[in-house]
Image (cartoon, rainbow, N blue to C red):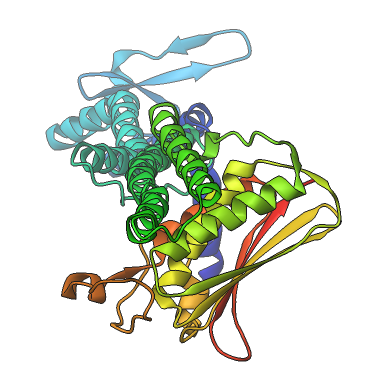
Length: 424
């Protein structure tokens, strides 16, 4: 009988994938067929019982039942049917008469009874096989969403309308998950932006502080020329412009994704001068020396100078944390690419740092500082040296400028960070 079970499973699977309308029609057709078969079987059984009663009461085949347990002899010819005289009437026993009437009642009532039973069974089976499971899944899904639990998947393996509704509900759940994820990412990005701007404000302030310290130390002794003073004041003015630009940008920008790169033609010598001024300002506030080597093939390049200086400032800030004696800056141009290298002579970067240095909020928790900054660090600062924000900003800005940011270690010690910019 295995083939029967396989056939039933096969048809059950087909009906499961029927549309609700087709499934209802299939159930009704099957029900009608079963009602007809059941009525036929019932009628056959009743007829057999009636024949048995007639045999027991010696009623011949040409007698017809006329009610009240009486059978009358009928004569049939080709044109008419006649009834014999009442002397030929045969009466059933009282018990057989009752049974005969019961059998007649059964043959009449079986049609509505079987039809009602079929309607009930069709309703129960249709709900059980086509509606109960998806409705239960939908109810659980809605309760889960109501509890803000979006982990429950509303999966119903059927190609009917209920299957489509469950798929739509699950798609809606995934959309809600994506919306919440996007919302959290936006909030996280906004928090990162706020922290990044606060972080970036430190670089121009450090440059200004370095120049102020230089003036405070050398100007009273007359060891600095007026030309150098004007150059320092010009550099300080440039940093104040950067601070003003920062404050204006903080008001306007909502996301680094909408940051607009404003390219313009810049003379290579002017960019070189700005880079050296930035390096000199940071060098003045530390015990390290910063050397700058510029290699431009073109006299003019197309770039956003503010982005390049912003990236350089962040890279120098990181290099000053880890350098021991010196930092080297090398800038070279290869066709339409500008490469900015910052190399320190510190301990270099570990494998983890090379992989995660530009991840947001990633930090090196060692206490090994170089001798870069005058003054002493607090214990908290020694335990938290951040790579993440500055290098994350650098990577974003490099990508916005059509380039990228990469990390490596020098063969003679120290870390090398390469910032690439598209200047075509």
